[in-house]
Length: 102
Image (tube, rainbow, N blue to C red; front, side, top):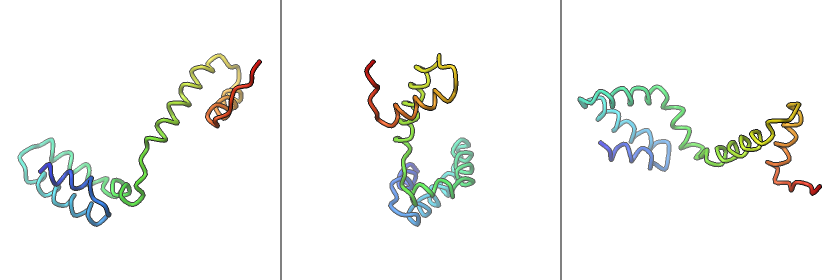
């Protein structure tokens, strides 16, 4: 059921998450929906990694935003002759420093 799946992601502890996954796993494996069966078996194989979300509660939005800024800076610095200069510009721009006036 969709409610069991949502309960899995809304769980506030590792124990609740495992119990909700167990309920959803049972439903999905006993359904006649082959895509659900494939998905739930794949998720079960990676369950320890997925459960780590409930242990750490870290989201990757900040990292993705930081990565996007780095890509923009690297695109702008395409004409630099050395990788060291590109690294210097990345550290300067991603460190929140102002560019010097010329």
